[in-house]
Image (cartoon, rainbow, N blue to C red; front, side):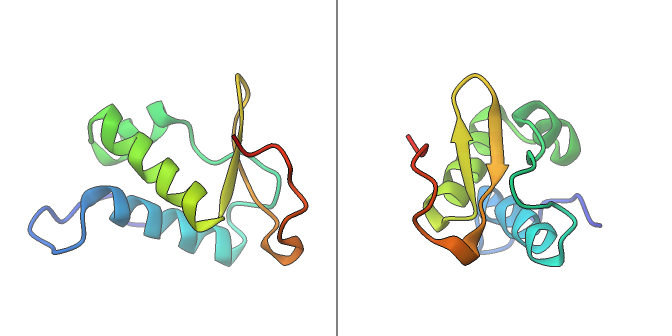
Length: 89
């Protein structure tokens, strides 16, 4: 899987990262209720700033692909059961 950002693309880096994580979720590489890579892992993998990694995770949350448990991490949401998770903050 590619881990490079195209800084000349019209799509912002955080959306490029989110798109790749979505591909991993939809392919089953990242399983439901399992954690996605940490911010630190995203920073190391793509060579981006912490703010960019946070924006990618926030974007995934806004799109409904993940949910975050404070002090625990961010996990893949079961999109087949929309609305069942009440732990989104």
